[in-house]
Length: 295
Ligand code: NDP
Image 1 (cartoon, rainbow, N blue to C red):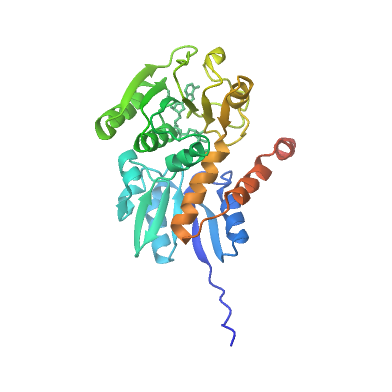
Image 2 (spheres, rainbow, N blue to C red):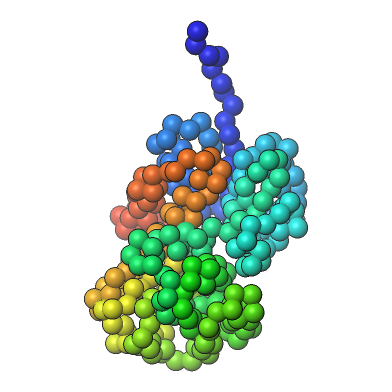
């Protein structure tokens, strides 16, 4: 006997404002299709004033989970039923998961970064330089400290954000941290094992923007990573490759945080290559040119 067809789809999505240029739907739904899951991932424009109602709506409609992007990563916390360890340490949530009817906030940004780094080296015992001290830097720093990195240099222009991250790392994670006030072109110490651009410098449309950094201080023993997903080949990534460094682009972090989200929601292990391909199609230079010509 064949079972009756089901027209019900399991719901996931992303809440943000603005949301129209967020490519997560293409990436996540490519995985759902590939694995023949009758699930949807909706791009949902949610204003700060509407966030509480949106979370109530997700509960009422039985969402299996959802991502939160700007400006909701911190503001969503009071609307949830609990937090995972990293989200609690960072004070920010980018992925909400329904577990036994409760909405639990997780942070998969840093975990996604560490997963892509692990494909190249084990962060345990490594000396890390992080350029930036905003949300992405915070997520990466916390997760690398939990993964056993030996020491950190946090390089940031604004002193308030830097102080907050350095304080978190020292008091909650007992990490060895140097705080560098970013003035002029920063010279990397030759002892650095991993160098990460966690600023927004290089993000489309400022694709040719230059990091204030002495490029000559990059050495071939360093692993260099950029969080900028669009375009994936930033000027920093190109400079690092030319210096002989091993590089990780921002798509690695974006794909891997998506992999972890899908694993949390569905229980399956999605194919990361399918997800990366979906993003590469969107971010290919050819499509960008078409976009520019039509805008
Ligand atoms: P925030 O606004 O929280 O932080 C921005 C950071 O960039 C701050 O440290 C800021 O320094 C620094 N910065 C910006 N402009 C300059 C400049 N001209 N000179 C020096 N420093 C500068 O943003 P997020 O941390 O949330 O996001 C940062 C980037 O990470 C974004 O481009 C985003 O696309 C990317 N991202 C990528 C993800 C992925 O999966 N690949 C996931 C999450 C984010 P200051 O404090 O001095 O202003």
